[in-house]
Image 1 (spheres, rainbow, N blue to C red):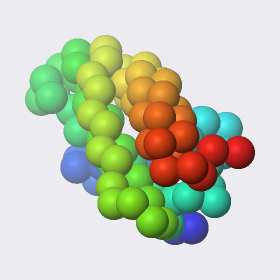
Image 2 (image 1 turned 180 degrees about the horizontal axis):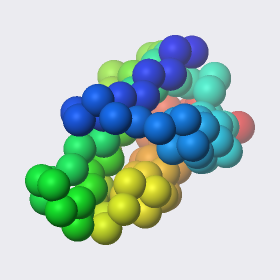
Image 3 (image 1 turned 180 degrees about the vertical axis):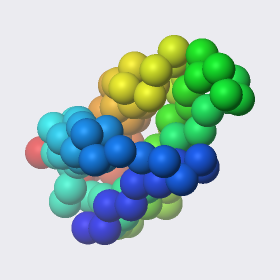
Length: 102
């Protein structure tokens, strides 16, 4: 499985990159058997003030299309946490419906 992490501002520090990888591997990537590719991107919706961050997670599924989740938060880590929680719920439903549940 391929994991891609990006930001629209081009500034993603190593600490945030490691945190993203850790959260994804502990969360939606537990369903790795059904995920071909994962891409997470961040954008600052407030300009230079940084009061609202957006996280977009796109999971390309091995057999059944794509799951896309976007959430916002005051910081990138909070937005990511919201995305991860939603992704887990969506993947459970999708895999259960397709008979891929572990």
